[in-house]
Length: 138
Length: 389
Image (cartoon, rainbow over all chains, first blue to last red; front, side, top):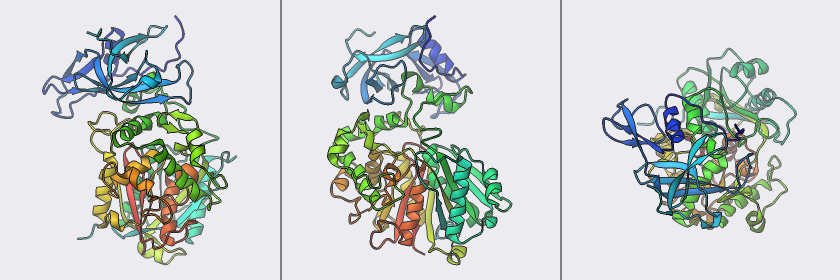
């Protein structure tokens, strides 16, 4: 197995399930089963109705770019610079922090339509990234 | 009815070490030097200190410092969380203790080998699965590991929404660098900055360039809090604490409050403003100078709006009008700030706030009655208003 540069998230009770979903190719959104409020990042209770019960749904992967930064320095080993980090407003209503790929830095625009691509590292670790929308996402 | 904490306490002493890029001494030594200097400044023996407050990020424990400087038995020892958001929070904890009689003379301190030792922005890692580590883990795997990148995400949205330009950020950097020309302690002393140099500096995390970032500094700073009554009998003119508050809002994250509906304001700073004005009975019109937290230039422009010096989206107009300069509406960070004096995590901005009230800044504006000081931006934060006795 190839060695990965990527800092892996710790897998705790509150977030491990989410990464397991990603490993299986899905961008999960946590949902309160009492009041149906969606929340991200995941937390063990609903801030609206205080229920501890939750499940999740799988996002369509479609969204719009809310904000971004293009990172040049410092350069951490393994990442490609300029590195475009984005906030995506998912069409389900939650917001997600990710990386934009297959897009030149000068082509990044506020409000652009983006779609999820499940990225896989050489060691098999998977995490959701985004690219300019092609209309292919389901 | 006046607020319980209002005017009960004062800054009686400020102590600073030399600021450098390589101190050659331990952080405990820097903390001790700063503490002894603050006691000397006040004319109060270290043996009268019975409380210490610092930051959770500070490596020096209260009791180590107490033993090193020969302090009294301690009645208060605590540390405040959230990086630079702790700055005026340390003052609040000291003020609450002194005003209630829990302690008499409290030192708030921050000492760091911030350049030669542990630097900020080197990435974050850890083994223990805490809620804080899980919070960072939504960003770590993507390589979003630095304060600059977290702040840039908000700054970019804000600038896009209100038409703030790179030149506006440059104006902030240059205004504070200009102040540093009169402050021999400052890193920027003897190193003036032009707009051409600013614009040509390397892009770090768009839209932020090199000169939008604060310094990395080795140094320490200590602030001595005592009762206003006691302060009147000490060496320096007291900087009376009119109001001091902490503030954290719903949807708050540490540096990454990306999930609020609107990203073009600072809700925690607006809350700090509301609380500190309420406690002090003052408003923006009463504030003559400020030391707004300035880890990044964009934070200054946004805070002008948070604290009500102008309306939403008008911060850039104030900056263009020269409001931050010595003869402007709100001379800001007259020591050079974290951008051009030193990055002692905001503690040195509190020291300048006290100097402005004393009338001893190296860039002393005329007629300073009240000074506003804020804690870190993008984190749980706080605000402090100092005034003439």
